[in-house]
Length: 455
Ligand code: ADP
Ligand code: ADP
Ligand code: MG
Image 1 (cartoon, rainbow, N blue to C red):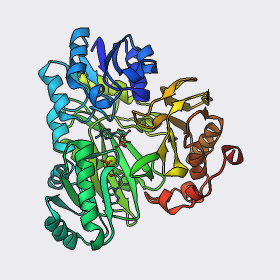
Image 2 (cartoon, rainbow, N blue to C red):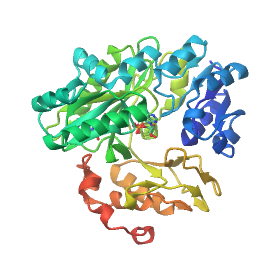
Image 3 (cartoon, rainbow, N blue to C red):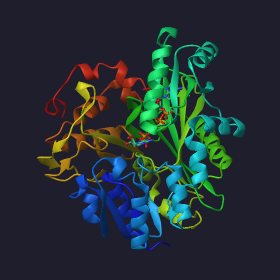
């Protein structure tokens, strides 16, 4: 087992990984930007080193600085968290070349699956159903040809996409040119790769994903699904497990497809196979995320498996054990707490947290790196915490989440606690039949209310 790990991330996920390491008796090294000097991940780690200015490209994405710190401190492995360098095949390859274990799949696997268009091809070959789509679109003529074949509405997606960026919905031929150009431009600026492909836009659909865990000896388990259909701007907001709307038979079919997907690429480590599920209960692969997922805690709560610890173990060559008879029990829900104003186009908010109260009680978990008086910086992702609850049934979990949200107090920055409370009391959410267009279709964003009125 490793004795020292470098964590190449910040915020709640860096804290989450430090905790797992400490519990495993592993020393931790963190890196930080000048804006993060007073951050929780810096104070909790055994060692911390400043690697550059606030902009992520100059610090958290500075590969050579991170590798240098790992080598100088004797860290045997690097945990990339999610976002930042987590799905960067070049960084994983650099670690491999330097004899440092990258806690994730092999660089080759990240490369294969990180090309979302090529990944679709791999899945077709493996017998996994994919959304009807079209190969890379090089120019407007290509786009017109593909659109004619696929029909409207359709989606233009970035080949290197992530975090909901580089995606454009095209409803009619008149929008095609503008959407194509803006998708390419956004993809180029966000991912350094302007290539795009096309998919049929399926609606209404549910987003259901499978949590996978694979060791280096070829063993693979699926730790159930997460339903992530409550989204804003193609980014998840609320996740739950198990999904309220799939039968055991369908669950097993999706698990089987997800196992085929990971076997097709000899996957190692934790990863997530994302599917869309239509009204006729047909499911389609959209992408595989080759990393720990933001919403991994909901799976941890219903399986009793610490995913970060297992991720570290399999990276160290430990084979999977104890998963033969594992069972999914109860129900877990996660609400992503973002520093943003949902009622003003989800505009990100920054500033000092002047008052903070974190809820507690049995089976209530708040993964965060914020504390009273800390400053939310404008340089980074707006997600400042994840509130997760666990209960025996979905009804009880919803009530528990509402209770916890009412207790959660964050003052000094805008946040989305009211929005979560509204969603949780919406009859469509409660029914479990909601789809990815839930927020867009509901009138929640038009009737701004105060937390006090909701609790
Ligand atoms: P998840 O399903 O885990 O939420 P997301 O695609 O929403 O996955 O991304 C997780 C986090 O990583 C988000 O906070 C997002 O902003 C960030 N992220 C995702 N992809 C990228 C990327 N290519 N570059 C930078 N950050 C990313
Ligand atoms: P990212 O890499 O940014 O996470 P995804 O391909 O996973 O991008 O898509 C993000 C979200 O966009 C999905 O969770 C889903 O809500 C929506 N989406 C993606 N593809 C389709 C599609 N073909 N039809 C309908 N919705 C889609
Ligand atoms: Mg996705």
